[in-house]
Length: 164
Image (cartoon, rainbow, N blue to C red; front, side, top):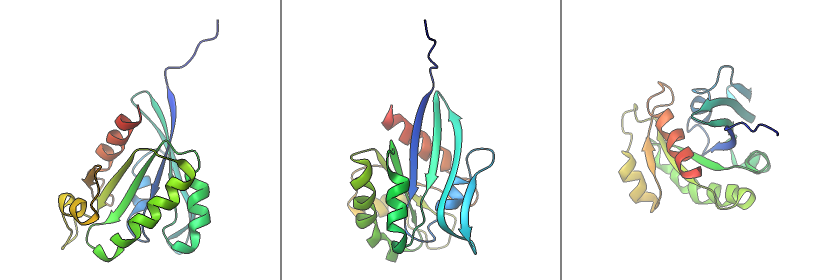
């Protein structure tokens, strides 16, 4: 009889507007995260993996600029869940949320989505509840500072709970 591992492979996509902190978020996990970047800007993807509970989590970050939409969609294909990272101190970028969500869900379907209200450590950062109201988002909006690692793990764990 073949033995099966209790582990479940899960693909998580981290996306969001340019300069929201997606790469910093991804780099908080795994041992040796990969970042395909030029001059500090992601032009390909971010990648890492880590065991969390019984999940072997593969975390893929997308570039944020609109001209990388094909890369965003390619990276998102087959995702089990999405973390959309926003810069809480830059509400002008919130307008991109609807388009990014449509683009990603066009290739991965209806999967759980959590919004990461990143950069909570910055002056002028809006609290997660305010961002949720502004976006009219029905799901979870959780605050973090990916730069310092504050709040990143609870966001991933919450998404995994929604997936399981």
